[in-house]
Image (cartoon, rainbow, N blue to C red; front, side):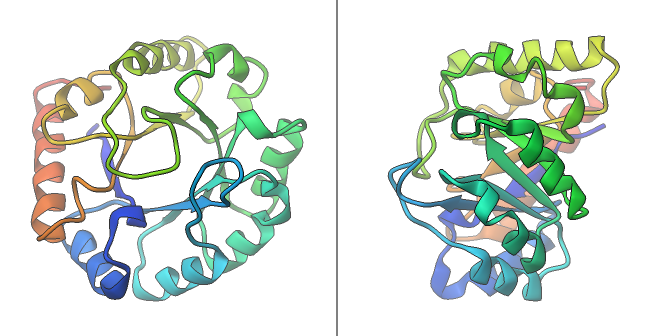
Length: 226
């Protein structure tokens, strides 16, 4: 099964956001990734539920909201109401991770947890069986256009092994510095969903998205990935 592409609107031209979302959708994107930052947990401020609701109006693709904020519990309901089908939260900020995951699920939304590059996989030991997906950061979150940290890829492969050994349906998403040039090694880790921002939202988002989707299909046919 081919991994799917989730373009991150963090790198989109916000003066043409609706148009660019339609372009990546036409190019074969499977979902839209929305990076939410509060200027506290990460050194950047981005968008909130209002923009998420606006994105919901221009696309039928699933909305994947990545909450890089210090108090995600305060806003989960707002993002669900805005149309998010997936919400992920960072293990680094939550004292009661199980409670947050269950709160997300109670809203009929798929729940994910996120690990920063330096966070060990052991942080997932007690939660892995309760989440729908794990988002592995391959850059330090905060800004788009960063270079992928290669040392994280073995950690992603180990996560794939743990999930398979336990017979779980948990999916793996990867985010940070993914390009067509390193896509082969990223797919080889066994990921299910790939977030790409600056590599997709450029002069021609539709063509860039289509190129990613074609390469993902080729890699799946060649037996790479899962």
